[in-house]
Length: 202
Image (tube, rainbow, N blue to C red; front, side):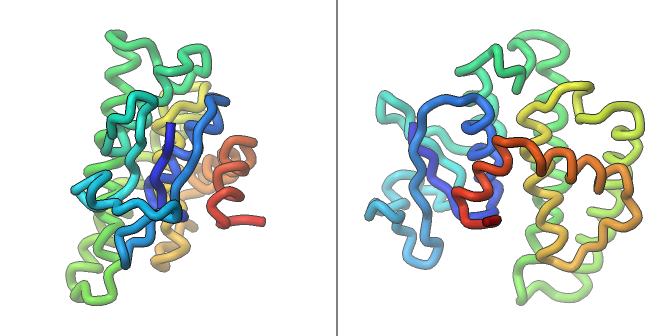
């Protein structure tokens, strides 16, 4: 497998999942300005959507969209525990979290990265993030990870999205459980390895 990524982008969640499984893979960094990759690929030919993550499977086909990629990676190594078995209620709970993170939290952060976003829109986004993280805070009062006692790909995705807080000036001070959760996940070897590979930490 080859993962197409950009440092610190949502593709980091897929990068973490790959390290967590121990599966063999390679990475190819996207230059958003030129839409070419470090290996020289025209990324628009690889993924016409123009954004990461995307993975090239061993048969040469391309899979896109973070939640789909995360579940695919987890299913390649079922004993990793990164995703409950397909068809179970627990798997639907995983999909519930992945959808919530992607549509309610991830997308709320997006306007904060754009310097041209009007202040009113940024304020609304900030308020929405506060509301959604408030829900996450209450859920983490009952268990260490989103689905219970075990780390899953939903936690990898949540970790990456919440980590953007420091880049957009969003203060996590009102969410002590989320801060503990982030610190706990940051210590995982797979997380450390992915962040080092992307140049995010030493």
